[in-house]
Image 1 (cartoon, rainbow, N blue to C red):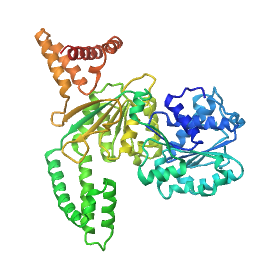
Image 2 (cartoon, rainbow, N blue to C red; image 1 turned 90 degrees about the vertical axis):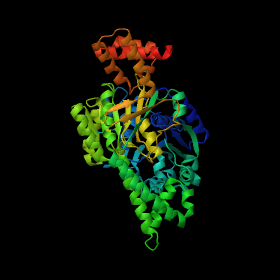
Image 3 (cartoon, rainbow, N blue to C red; image 1 turned 45 degrees about the vertical axis):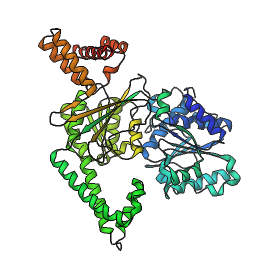
Image 4 (cartoon, rainbow, N blue to C red; image 1 turned 180 degrees about the horizontal axis):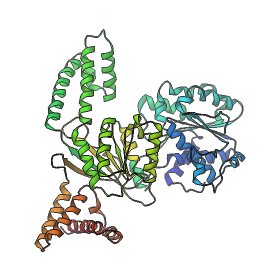
Length: 541
């Protein structure tokens, strides 16, 4: 393959071969796991003189289509020793010939799942896990007994720890005499810990490489990014309801803790599972107490998630961001996504779209394609986009309503930090309600990035950025003292308002000068002039 690999990918491949082509790689979303796997496949195939047969397992149909496209593009650019590659599109094939729904389909690639039913005799097979459970193990064992060399690539392998999904590994106890012909590569951004990880390593091989946010930022394999924490407040009635839920939960938990003192030693996940078990045992005198406590937990979480300030904040935030930004908005609730969509459509007609489970698969594909091509630049997405969708060119992410799952946090950040041709930076805005159980910090240890603490007042529809606001006020004061007229001051206030939710005022002067020279409109030029003045004010204070 002509495409040059990053240093970490080369080092990882070297380590994988040192471990006899077995192992799990944990690498941040957007850093190049797919290319790593395809390169491993290609090099191993060359070592084996083209005899390798490849099984790729993915958790969703959307990921199957992505792998199908990536595999065909890879093989078309650098055909392997296998002559079957000649039956597909060649090096100069048009892009349309490489799309998943193209009529030009390589004869050596087969798909199983999500409506595809290729026979399993293709050199390259891509399976959705639901279809792989009851046939992949048998197929691998059969081919090994026939003398084939097999590479199993388990993408998003943290999904395969459950009892049902482990069925794909049932062949392992029977391949001792063929073990030198079996190779495996697990891929994940967020591996589980403890017993779950031990389960995966027992079948895919040990964890051989870790490439996190910190390493990716240092290695320049992801875009530089800023994280903005925006604190919000409840309305008075929401605050009262939250406190009422909390008081009831405290009382109930005290009763449960008295009977089960070990509860306080458990992790959040373990505590939830234990309470669920207590609630489900109708013979237990505290089953109703546990059930009520859990019900109140869900109600309180929903209240935090749907706090009215969230939608208002996002609308005002999007208004203040650059009109050229491609924005991904992550939400947890469909009703909230629909409300935000209606409001943004009013402000930015035909420039917003939404993606969620009730839209239908074709509608979701259409809106994602519109976002990809730029006909819309704002996409409001539910959990469906956390895994299974490839959105490489989003520059801004907004967490409308948060998640307590670290895996989702990392995946969401990964959607916007993929390395871009323009080297443009990325920004992630995390909204959280103060004085609640919601965490106030989003990925505090996620590598080298700038962190900004903002707050939003729903009543005045305004943002507060203390460090920025101080400089902006001093700049306006200086302009007044220097005799600036009312229209000039008004224009400066407009520009400074926009900059409050951005980090442009921290850019080096040479970059700010380039923005000033490239500005197409007077208002745009004025904005960058104000940012340069703020930077100079920061340096000379």
